[in-house]
Length: 247
Image 1 (tube, helix red, strand yellow):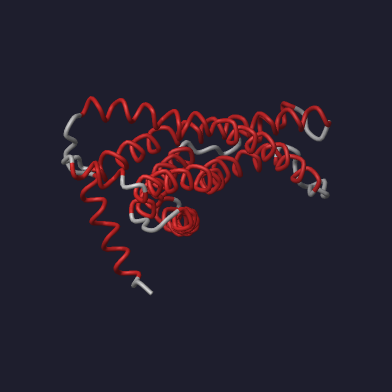
Image 2: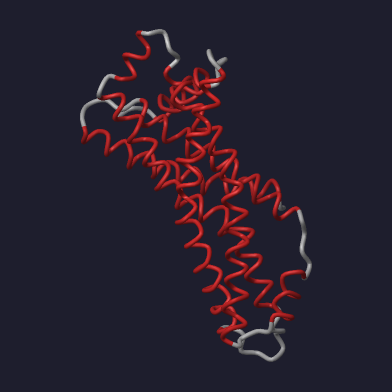
């Protein structure tokens, strides 16, 4: 079994090649735009659907668990806001995207490796790691925060719609709960986490795809490992960033 230190060292060596000076920046700009569409815009549907239902469910569950008359109704809006901003829209959404985006990245690059397309690029003198991986990293770190902001808005809006339509809370109380003790840094904290998670998803998935050897079966295995390791690193970094930024 290959040592974990071997993979860590090879991962950082790969990143060194990825972030080397691009040969033709105009080509990279075009690739980044393409990756923004592939990684971000094509993920908007699943992010929006998850956020709408999660905001609605959090609102209803909070309302169902408020049994005491001592707890004000605006707590429903407060809980929905905190849940969407602090955890769901960043951590949970990025965990979902690690499966969708990370799996696609690993399988795409892995297929290019086993079909010797990467070898052909290197023979032509192209920095294949930078050409294939850098646009994906930049695109994800740029577009993921926008997806998270949209997720926050949709989740909170869905909570308001469901809460008022079912009669569990008035719009006045819901809005008061949204505004109660709101700290703008919470949004900054979420966006910082999102950028870190975007880097983890793209770089780790690219690493597993780039060093795939064998056939289609190995491509599938690399894709699975990419998703699993991305999720584990997201959870670990989520804990570390929370300790650093919030406590």
